[in-house]
Length: 361
Image (cartoon, rainbow, N blue to C red; front, side, top):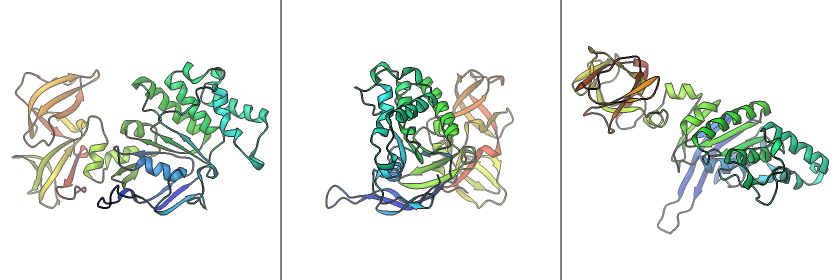
């Protein structure tokens, strides 16, 4: 099911007469392709959960329209939109078994959609098998692990065969290993069902690993849409560049002068045809290559062993953060006792942004 958002806006009134309205979502335009998994990504307070609530019908937009296919669902209540919802806290009924939790949405169907008990339990069994909890049907939620409870919540959302599946921070309560396993399962389930899925998270690694497209938001405004690797490789502004990537991108005060990118007194890269002036120079951690004759000199701090790679931690007076983190192969020798380290830079891992607007140069 294709989902179209047209000038979607949600404004919450200020608490007092003097308080300005809060615009949680600001003129959001996006077409979500049929059958794809979309990662809605951004920091806390960026408007991603509000956007999800607008799509589900839990919130009413101040302006704009929401379409499922060619149907305008803006004024429809949640139960008539055909959406499946999975929340961060699972929201399972503690006194019900797994099977009863999954069946519950089917028991509330009315009219021509109403099903026999046999059909409901058959649907529940199919949903449980899909998420691989069919052997747990008689257990209560308290007898399940966090990951198992999350699978019950997903099965309950899928049992009605929703037109759109909405996931709001569904993995936040799981430990790191279980999060990895569960997100892989989410991707498998989405591919098997073909349900258009919108996945809200603040975890950029999570979104990039399973999404067909990611949508990056800030302060209620859409910043960039694209395939995960494309957005990582071609950020449109400094915010997107800083939000995507672990470790975070390194940002320096710099300038373009004489066709060169200058950081301090060093010309670190060629910049032919670029307009001269002050810029932010952002370098991905994997963009540094140790080279005794390299043009960029940093002060050595320490080396952190990561296994197949090492993180070279260094400093520079023009660095905006506390430390520079450079990720290099563990096979490359680096003298951690040296006072300085010199680098060559990979041009495709260096981005220039306007100092005022922070747009890509």
